[in-house]
Image 1: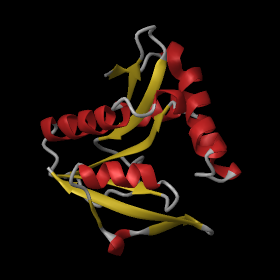
Image 2: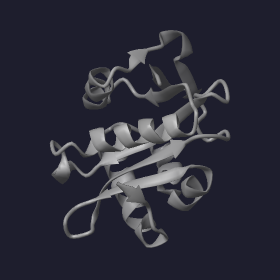
Image 3: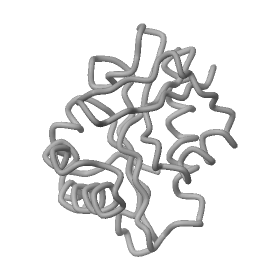
Length: 157
């Protein structure tokens, strides 16, 4: 697990858009934001997992401050967004490594809770979050745009 390099932004964009859109997890109106890796890196800690050949196979944006998290409600909450794992690399623990690294970094930054938004169709992600101890916070579910309903999960750190 390492910070993303600017020369990897194109690969991260390709991976993120592919997984979210082709997987039916996001609307076409969200593509520009999914592809804006440079903008994401300016508002978060962009982390990646690389395979043995150095190719990015997973990425996540960790939000420790600022408004990019959108789901945070206080300064003692952290969030992560746009967690993505290459479909060819699934089942190797990449997603769990990304989440656990976010949790460790949030704890080190003095945060008391990790929160995240997820779509109803992201059932594999839900299983991972629940296995790691995240619990649903239905009272914080939200709709960023009409027709897109997001569920909120949280883990006390």
